[in-house]
Length: 115
View 1: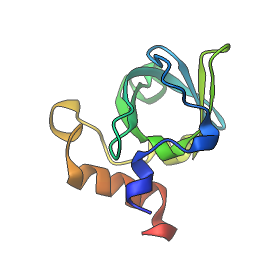
View 2: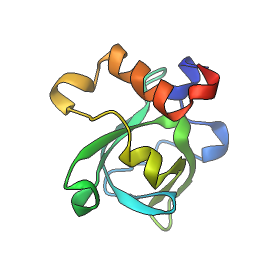
View 3: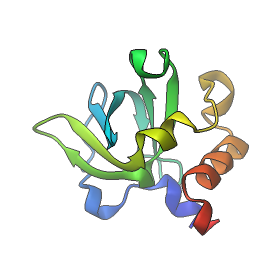
């Protein structure tokens, strides 16, 4: 389960498009825009700039949370709620982007029943 957290689900429809600038929709509404992303096997994720929603913070979203990518609407849909995202462990790009410990914290936060 942990490894799958960092891979896009086949049903999400990720076909290699540049997701930078796409709107990110959680269950409950818009949470920001994709600032950076990766499709690296076993480490795929989105870095989302939340803008004023969470005081301009960035958040890291594991690829598994992506349920659909709408190329025409330039929108990424998530299985996570806005509240789950808001309560996630704080993200610091310079120290957390490649941190396996931080990724483990996120996996535990978003999917505690599967850990």
